[in-house]
Length: 260
Image (cartoon, rainbow, N blue to C red; front, side, top):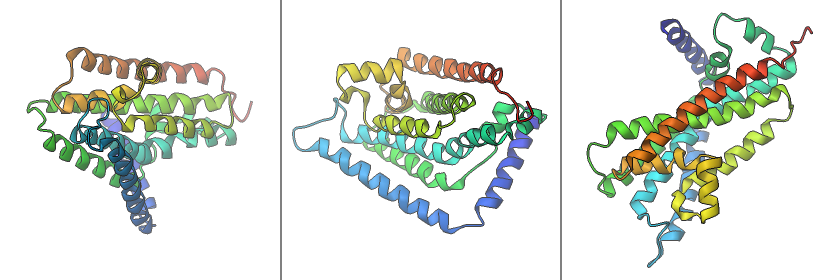
């Protein structure tokens, strides 16, 4: 574990040094996050005209859901998209051979090699929105530890979805389009899952676990989450992570190196 942490520090240090050669990117990303957040808040506000609500959620509570979505989108821009989008290139160029020969786990290398600081404004904005919404909604005290666990669980679920989809590049070349479809579908997590019709609620809970990405952690932060759903979220995260690991090992059986 110590060796992997030391390796991770060197990975991210080198990535930061390379990325910070273009400091203007930080301002561009900051403006992009501000624009996206303003647009999301505007759309959300349309559901809160006098006499209307969104799935039984107050405005302040819905801000927590939106904050978690913004946080996860920042994580995607910081770690998932920069790293997992390169799996396709490694397969196409044959450089995955070199990754498999390295004295570190290949899934770890492919998932954590690059750290992009340009997603940090999104992460900060997400935390800020969560804190503001929870404070305004008078969130119950003492929900901190469970909420943190569920946020970690939601990040692991999101990672597993991205990694499994990226790993299919061993069979299919144009996987990047599919990852964009996934990212567009996960936009549904901006709003509480109870705001959707019954059919979509089922789909976003048991097929594509959007509910476990934003709504379940938001309920825990607000102090009104049920123990069953919290345990289910942790279970889904563990299963998703295990599935990504098993799928990667299975996919490698079909990988033919550049020299074969």
